[in-house]
Amino acid sequence: MSDLRAELQKNIDEAEWDWLIPHVQRDAIIVVTNGLDLLDVGVAIAGDNIPSVQQWIDEQLIAKPTVDQIGEWNLNRTKRFNALIVEPYVLVQEITTV
Image 1 (cartoon, rainbow, N blue to C red):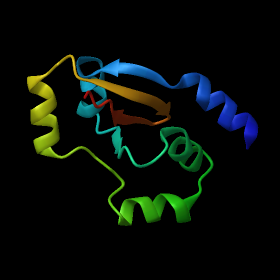
Image 2: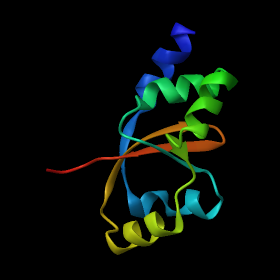
Image 3: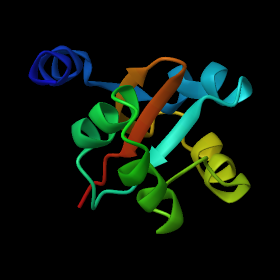
Image 4: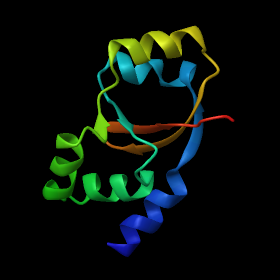
């Protein structure tokens, strides 16, 4: 599992909303709330850790983007996210600016 974690760690990168639109169109984006570690979620999904993933879904900590979120992000095409590809999904976490 540590090899998987190390491999996924190397694949975390920043992405602009504009770059993520094709993935939204194929329904592959999963939004991870800022309270969760993006890497932990990626490892759980890639490792088929169903109990953890189901708990996060039930608690609405990971979800498909809402229509409102997509609309908001479409207004700011340069909005930035931390992103991690875990085939067939792209996990994203909003980068908040202060």
